Image (cartoon, rainbow, N blue to C red; front, side):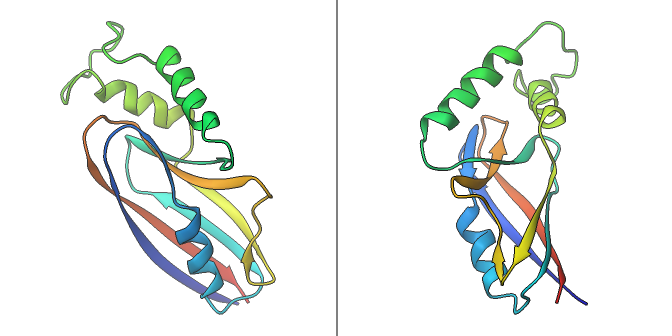
Length: 139
């Protein structure tokens, strides 16, 4: 059994879903391992990770529309507004999504479904630099 790690640095330009599938697939492919489990972990509390459809971009637009209705910026319910009206909504969005993902490695490839992609979901409106740790255990 072997383990490998890698850090992705993703520059975001505000709130939206960023497709990081190519970086994950490329790293897994060049890991030298054939079978195992890839874990992704984002080191932030106002961004998250998702696996969702990467074919029709309308899915991403609709997801954002849903989250805008579910957790609106500036909601008077929130008292934590240190960094602005999108501060606490960003934390709620992270709590409702995921900070880590697991993807099987099969025959040296990330075993994503046909229409599946891996996304970093930036929940803040400001540009940020986000870190995603990739860990692979396998053989």
